[in-house]
Picture 1 (cartoon, rainbow, N blue to C red):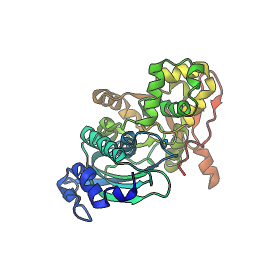
Picture 2 (picture 1 turned 30 degrees about the vertical axis):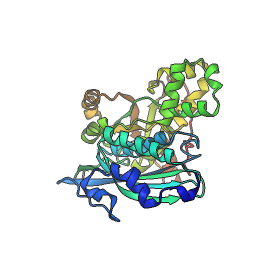
Picture 3 (picture 1 turned 135 degrees about the vertical axis):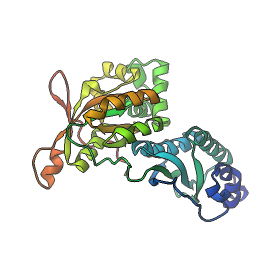
Length: 343
């Protein structure tokens, strides 16, 4: 479509995004700013993440799925802080070849997830992109005053939990770049589809947020791989960790991959895009956390524990905070701290 025939920015906002501004504070997107007051007795929790074509999704991915992924990866962070979501801001950088049906699907994707997760668009900006599509979302949620769950508050003796299953998205990405691996891994069509969906459309564990708020000492979402993100938690908290590799929760598809290719454990531990919650829970609260997670309909699995970091100073202290991934049959898995790098 020629650029001259496309809607201008004001028309674009009115047609596709004003219907998403359901909160009164969004002022129907007719002002330069929005208004927002947190619920009484609560703090605001803020998070910004961007997704870009060629980095976080493929250029030919459906724009509706891209919109949902962009929103969900941010909502995942709110869940890990124990926060209830309120709304979001959207900055959309459009490539030169965008089409109206692209934006139609993009807005429909956001609309579906707004309804599912109870949030509203509050404003944003639309600009041109010199390259591919870029979507930046800032979400805001609320927690009781002073109670946001931080990632740098793990303590020795805490039990480490993860929600859901690990590695599916990283394996899904591998299949996207090398589809023939599905045959080598002897995956069924359902298993292949499962891995693909886990990469394309993460599931923010918002239902788990109340249990995280009530029971976790520290928490974060796993976006860059368990190995790298757990190391960040350990370094920030001044602790170390021991993880039971054989206890890691895996889907049937991931287990089948491991059966065919045992070295894929490196991808499962060191890959990214899980968007599951990693929580450090005091041992005395572990049983209650498991009960509340089950009541919320979110599977959680104990995978290890927080331990004292070895003595050291400066760089030695950082090295001492590297988590150990222990195999029951003997020997450690050494996934390193590579993880998935977005920059």
